[in-house]
Image 1 (cartoon, rainbow, N blue to C red):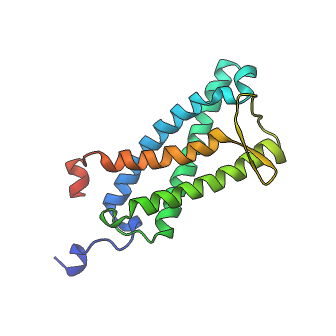
Image 2: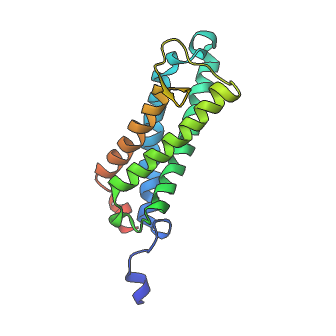
Length: 168
């Protein structure tokens, strides 16, 4: 056995345990939590009153898949920004904070693009809004990125690891 084979992976993307954690623990939890959130906040958009059941199902699936891409990208950005190594070296609070800030930044841009710049959807009267420098952004999508990614990261990190993940 060489010295290089017993040293920990210097980067998260070279560490099998980190990749397993992301793919098999974080992303599934992120998907499930975002699915629940998307269903719960449907009445805050006009599509709730205007859409058919099949279209509402499409909207929920489409948005949940988008949330997965955003959330996984935000986590990867956070891991790069924090210079994360192997998972046992991660500073979870720092990683979570950077992921949240990244997700919120994307959400502000996306909500502005889709409700103001080129209206693709509208908020219903039920949506509480936050005024950000003259832009009204829905509170629910902002709260989604404050709550869901840190909760998914915490739940993924608090579950006991399987033996296969430990030996990988």
